[in-house]
Length: 159
Length: 106
Image (cartoon, rainbow over all chains, first blue to last red; front, side, top):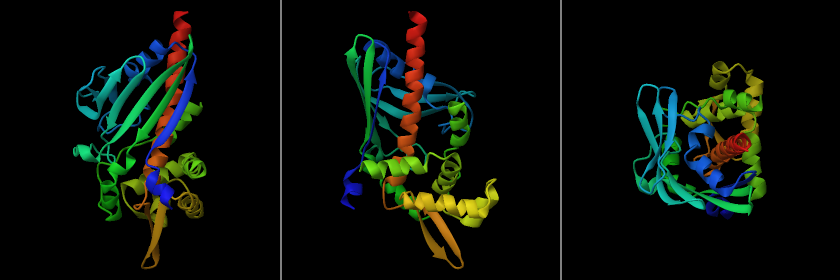
């Protein structure tokens, strides 16, 4: 089963009918407009999701009560071609403070035509989260589980 | 690899299975426990667990007379399956958002 051991990334791509600049700005500045809001580590509803458009910035959710959850660090920012950010969420759906145990998301934008852009996303180094699974194995109870109401979300998306 | 990936994604494509998977990510649980928490019959829960198990997302072990299920602790399958679903949804939302904007400005 070596493929499990080596396959530590998940890759996705999508083609959108928009110029590359708009695709890039929507993905970054507009991240909150499409990020499933149910993906929320805060204890309250998310008022907005902010994507700092600079290296060293964060992607963070701000709750309706002003609380914040900084769940990603912007590692590379090269408009309109490429952005890389960390994924500081552990497999137990908590903020990971040990940066060696975080994964990374790279998003590349490729202009296929003046009004068509291919977006390639790779979420890699998933094995770095490995330690988290030991906690799961030990059955450590987690009161702060990620309240993911994906069924509700899927119903909304599917109409 | 592709087959393996789609297995996990397919298994999490069902809303009830996603909820079961999330409960197990929170902590290990027995079939009866899941059935009592969800508006789903015990046989249906068992069936969903079988699909999740076949996809490599959860594992089970007998504890006394019960069988306890938990997210597969040895692999990345569960995390990958989850992220696959997350990014699928996010990119679909992204496409809708960017194309809506483009249409509005034309």
